Image 1 (tube, rainbow, N blue to C red):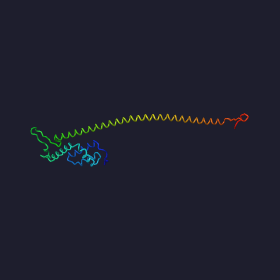
Image 2: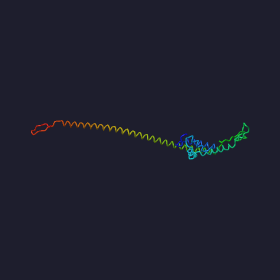
Image 3: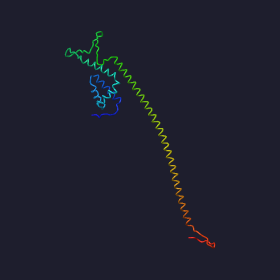
Image 4: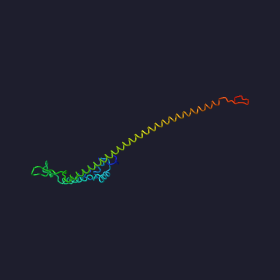
Length: 217
């Protein structure tokens, strides 16, 4: 058993739902059977298919539904007139309407439709086609807006990367200057210690009462 899908309906799903449901209507079957077949085809429950048909898809195919119902009615009428057997090897079909003037037989089938139904279907299809075009134009505009936004973000990203590189360069310069300053301060401190030590090692003298210099230990 295939997994039950939970994702959004696509245009292809809607088309499959419409085609199979219209076929079941045309053949005199039930919509429930149609929904079950559609569910098996696209991996959804029959309830989900029924809800989608009644809430959205049905409105787009009102003309086609009327045509399918007309075909179903014609099919029902045709079934009532089974071929009449003349002999064991031949039969005359009551589906044929003889035309005396031409000598030909005009055959009426389930595909015979009224011009009004065809016109309604074509108008409905034109409306659906126009809606699809408007939807496509809307999607194209949204796509263009997204591309413009992506281009703007790309330029902003490049600008920020440049600023980051500049900051990193400034940081390296400041860090190098700081290290050099530390080294200078360290050398100055060492030199100060050496001067102090030299001062301490130098001999000290003082003058006594007679004016003579004497070394102080």
